[in-house]
Image (cartoon, rainbow, N blue to C red; front, side, top):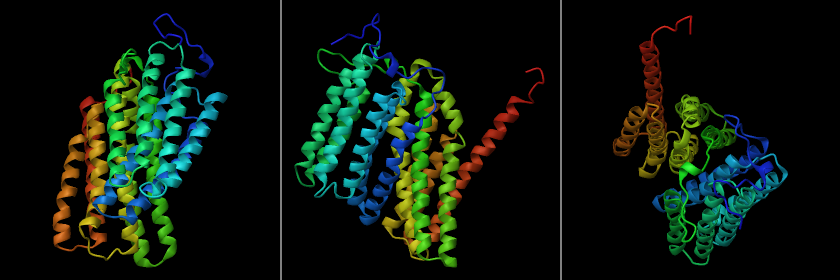
Length: 404
């Protein structure tokens, strides 16, 4: 195999993405993302049909596996040019595999387990092998992909093994898939005889990764609005419309919290230099799925709100109506803290407050509408805190000189 030492050159330079600042998301990448509109819908329906701790745990496992497929495809697109025909075909095949993955998701812990695992393995291994071929000769990255192929093949095989056994062993094995992948990523996919890769060698364009993850957050939020809109059409009365407006305001508030600082996050990652690989690994592979999980849980709460806004909350419903926004804010607090962009204290405080309110909400048997209103007010308080912080920062800088 051709080496990828410091004096080697890429064998397929036409397949590599140029570095011209922040590389914009292409239509091919957006087409791949379209599949995940369906995937997020499947996840929220899965949780809604099994609203309890076992269902929540299984939903988390499925989200973890689905996220691994998406985020590694996004990483590949950070280095490969999506509009080159071989790369485009690979992404289209990956889209097909992800569609099968999403279709099998409701029965992943039942009769469709093998289809789910086979689709997962096919996309993970196939895409990584192609990327290894396309990047051959690229210093640093060539070695990294050879090491990654070994780990991805091992975890994909483990996923298929999990499909061969029944629950609860299947859950344990698929959790192990996520755990082994996390260990491999954190340690640079070490392989005897091949060494391990380091984030400093990954040549990451952090701004592009930030933009791609922003797109996924929009997909998740859009699915939440889709669920509430579809539920509204089933019963157009004043109570349901009021509940819809409350659910929409909650989704808009989560959007505001994330995207009000999205440009600053993109700039921070684009200018991270040699830290970009290590920082991107943390915020995209580990922290963004927490925020996506929060949106999925919130969407289930919104659906319950529209069906029965006057229903008293129980533990399960309190943890989706209040816990969904709390999970999102916890993930975003860690994201902001990692980027050093401020706002993490307000988000962490809001997370604690939302979770603490679950106890009195259940004890006092408040309605779903009241619980959702409380979640909206607390999320709105985070937005106000961000606005106050921005105003103070602007005032501390003083008036802008006309000579600058």
